[in-house]
Length: 195
Image (tube, rainbow, N blue to C red; front, side, top):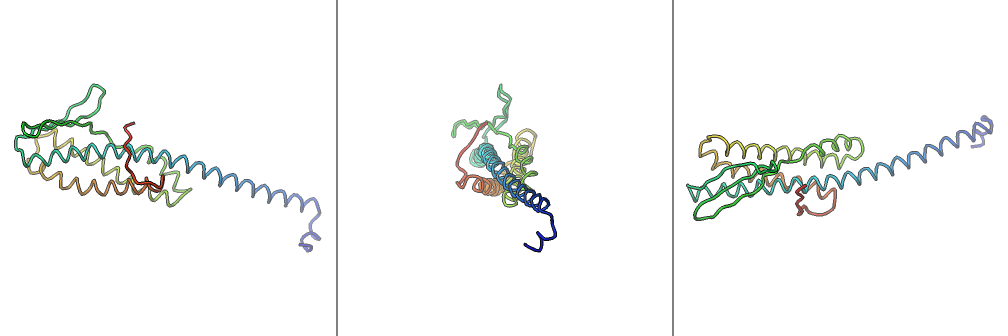
């Protein structure tokens, strides 16, 4: 240290010390800001997982009713739109009664925006978001397929085969959503959020 001081004037050494201290303080502030940002994003992501879990539940219940079509050939299934604009699945049969549920659309937008930012801040969270994002994309595909098979004149074999495909996919979708939820909250995904 004496060698450095002998070559630098005192003002230069003080300026260098102040600069280093300022950089250390600024780095500490950035780290704390990133931690607060990650904490806020985790809260938002947990809510998105709960919303997508509600969408998954609606599709899961509709699929379980489609399976009943094998037992009851005259099982009536159709989709309509509520006055509020929500898609509703109906199923009915004289022996099994009637059933209806809102088939909510999966939510991708918020997760996609956060995923981009997390790529530079937290790699572990980023990989969990990426996996859940892919799962929600698959959930959207399942919902679209449900709409297609109930809206068009589709071969009965396709309608009856849909539950087998959907159940396998829904299990994977839930596991990946729950993986992100656990990273965000430390808890298993049990809650449903409607809005």
